[in-house]
Image (cartoon, rainbow, N blue to C red; front, side, top):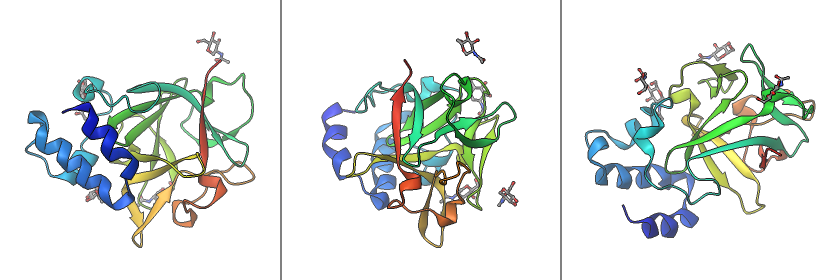
Amino acid sequence: MHKWILTWSLPTLFYRSYFYIIFLVGALSLACNDMNPEQMATNVNCSSPERHTRSYDYMEGGDLRVRRLFCRTQWYVKIDKRGKIKGGRDLNSNYSILEIRTVAVGIVAIKGVASEYFLAMNKSGKLYGKKVCNEDCNFVELIQENHYNTYASANWTHKGKEMYIALKQNGAPKRGQKTSKEDTSSHFLPFTIS
Ligand SMILES: *[C@@H]1O[C@H](CO)[C@@H](O)[C@H](O)[C@H]1NC(C)=O
Ligand SMILES: *[C@@H]1O[C@H](CO)[C@@H](O)[C@H](O)[C@H]1NC(C)=O
Ligand SMILES: *[C@@H]1O[C@H](CO)[C@@H](O)[C@H](O)[C@H]1NC(C)=O
Ligand SMILES: CC(=O)N[C@H]1CO[C@H](CO)[C@@H](O)[C@@H]1O
C-alpha cells in the first residue's frame, strides 16, 4: 500500500465512502482479503496492534496516540475504574488519559489507560466501558471543517444517521440517537499529555 494513496484519499473521506476505502485496503491486504468491508470495520482485534501496523501515520502520533479528549462543552472524556463514561475536569485524574489506537483507516479504538476499559457504544447509542474490545469499540474519527474531531460509531447508526461520542453541558454522556456532527457536544480536541 503506497502512502500517497492514503494521503490523497483521506481529505475526501466522507461518511459514506469510508467502507469503500476500507474495502480498497482490504482488497490489497493478504491478511484481510477474505473479509468484506463491513467485517473489516467490525472484526478488528483491538488488543493485537500488530495486525494493523501498516503506516497509517497520516495523523499526528501515528498508530497509537495517548491523549485527553477535550469536549467543546468543556469536559474531558473520563472512563472511571468501573468502566463508567463521564465528563471530568480534574487534570490530575488518570482516568481521562486515553489511548487512541488506529485500527483501520480512519477507525480508532479508545481505551482508558488507568481503567483498562475501552470506550464503546451499543446499538441503543449508550456509551459504556468494555474490557474486551468488539465492534462496539470502533469509531470513525473525522476532523471536521471547524478543526474539531468527531467520533461516530463505526458499527451502529440510528435511522441511517451516525451516532457520535458526545458529552452534554453537565458532563453526562449524550445518547447516540440525539447527537449530530453539528452539535458542540460531539466536538473534541485531542490534547497531548503534558
Ligand atoms: C486478540 O489478539 C490477542 C493477541 O494476539 C489474542 O490473545 C486474543 O485472543 C485475540 N482476541 C480475539 C477476540 O480474537
Ligand atoms: C497516575 O499515573 C502516574 C504515572 O503512571 C502515577 O505515578 C500516579 O500515581 C497515577 N495517579 C493516580 C491518581 O492514579
Ligand atoms: C445499551 O445499553 C443500555 C444501558 O446499559 C441498555 O439499557 C440497552 O438495552 C442496551 N442496548 C442494547 C441494544 O444492547
Ligand atoms: C453496520 C454494521 O456493521 N453492523 C454490524 C454491527 O455489529 C453487529 C454484531 O456483530 C452486526 O450484526 C452488524 O451487522
